[in-house]
Image 1: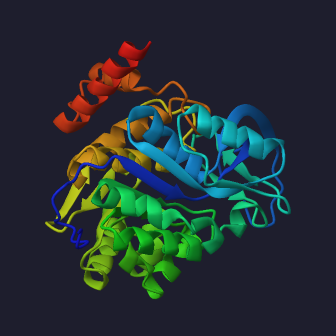
Image 2: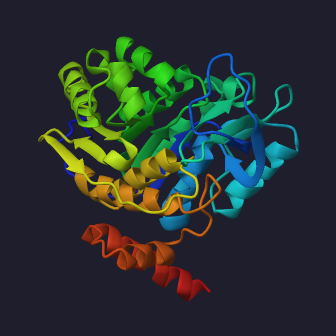
Length: 353
């Protein structure tokens, strides 16, 4: 059984079980590049692009690029948006039997806004079907982990209550599954204070979330903030591995042996919304294939760079074949285990065509 050590040997996984927000949204283009003020009114343009919520953003790439069984756990409302989300999950080959329909609450709605420079943010509704996810939705998850054991990966993403995420991770840990999690900036301090990270093997955070953990270097460089957060968490949670992403500044990995920096891949971004979710998906995918965390972060960087070439939060053009071509065009050497996995997926897709 996995002891949670960051230096544990990579293991192949064939099942990915995740919980998080499921919903639809709209994208808005903000006029003017300065940050919206607290009491400021600003004109925006409604964009035609498609927006989806955290769990779907992550699991889309896991299902599309890999061959693991993918099981989302969550809730949608009894409305057109909910039915659309479930249909899309099923079309990717996911097992949607554990996505419940809530008759009393609407499907989660997301409002993503982007500035002219390509960066932006996201707002989500608090009273939604996703906000009601709890123990009732996890009653049979034990059977899933019992069947897969150490061949399973659990993924806990925002937009469902912290208690539900922790319960999923606790159950996963009892069966030796590897556990990945991400948190919002507003949640990360509570995750540290309440020791929720005791139930996580790999946490992926962005530089804003890292700054919330290491406020004593607020205003410092991305490297200073990332390393301060990493060493603070490593001291408090010695079995935890970490990834800190910082956009154009790249990312940092702590895997128990030290801190490793991964340079960013500079592309002409169309929309950076969803890039962090794509990065987490890359970490999960590569880890499922048996890559080390440093290798997984390299692969995640490539996937994230490809994802921002779409106006949508999910880049529908990403397949194993297009990702291989993207890496080749940029003369990027993918980790061998990741390249081989993608090539195998391409072969299987062609054989089934």
